[in-house]
Length: 479
Picture 1 (spheres, helix red, strand yellow):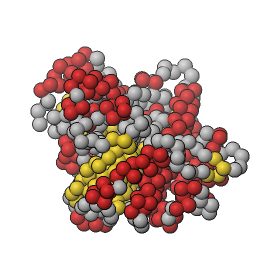
Picture 2 (cartoon, rainbow, N blue to C red; picture 1 turned 45 degrees about the vertical axis):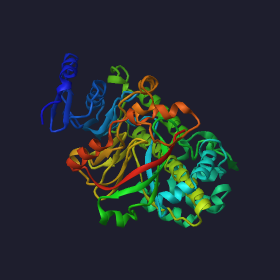
Picture 3 (cartoon, helix red, strand yellow; picture 1 turned 60 degrees about the vertical axis):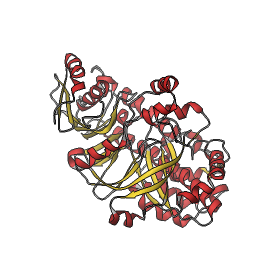
Picture 4 (cartoon, helix red, strand yellow; picture 1 turned 90 degrees about the horizontal axis):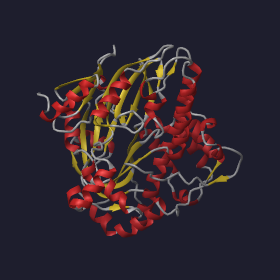
């Protein structure tokens, strides 16, 4: 496939800055000319835009090595690739040996996706739409959700994830969770990546959540968060792989709901803590690494590497619970409006995590695991379809897939376009967005994102995933 015509000027500019870029068969290969490292590769269809800043960030990530041992051994990026604010492009996936990079995960630790289906029709839902919206606005935005836990619940969560939390919290459910089917939550864990239970430790969490005894009301649990995070009610428009969909309990016409959120302030607390720790642990007298992406060497700093991975897991466990509770509140409201509704979990998977690999670790930033046979959830914008996929375990792409369509316009740019051209020009016609901040509806308009279909098609053609079902949005909650 020829190089996109509109790319020539950009590539010339990047070459003058020392970045070597080649394009072939929808894959950009990039590397700094002076670096003796393998090229980083990005899968992006020719018809979609690519930003020079994102290519520079990826090439910089690919050349990271620690002066006392450890290096990046492979670097890839998924089609939702775009620049990141902290120097790491969104959609980046790296394989490392004897090395971890806290900044490559950042502070939105275990941002991820959760998908449920329910045996309700679109007409069923719309008949109670206003009532459900009012109830969930209270739960998600107005603080009326009734969730309280003991410090022992948090200690168990941080140490053992969902399995630890369930074992303690189930014995004395409070508030909203008194109506929960706890046996269902236990069985749902089998459909959560790693059962939502990583090896963390309470010592890394904010002190106020684990100190002393008694009840704690955590204002962050069961909150959506900012940015591109959301809770969305959808319906299953088309099943593409009937055998797999049947095995996962997915059928055409079903109601569905999708949660995209992470570890909130716990992730920020731990992410910022380890950004500073990695910087402080840098080898004295050695120049700082490019873009201040400080790494930790497993050869010379094994205790620091172990501690970081434990701290990251601690935040990840909180992220798993945050998504569970966001979904459980919605499931409880469906039961309140429609009677007994099971709404089983299809899958819950992480985006921003460091996970063990045969060669060391794989770190994903704005990308998700796509192991062979594993469900993969790829959302579109709030005005376009989302996809449930089947992972193919493609080692060429480090067993990964995109975590969405990928932003293509900044919040400022999309707001300017909407102001000048109207809401229809940014794709908001027919979009049902529930938010307390009117600007959020504009900032997250469909035109702010790449079209989802080329993103999906490119990954299917590359053998990363196959399509199981397509889902259409009904309404979206944005904080």
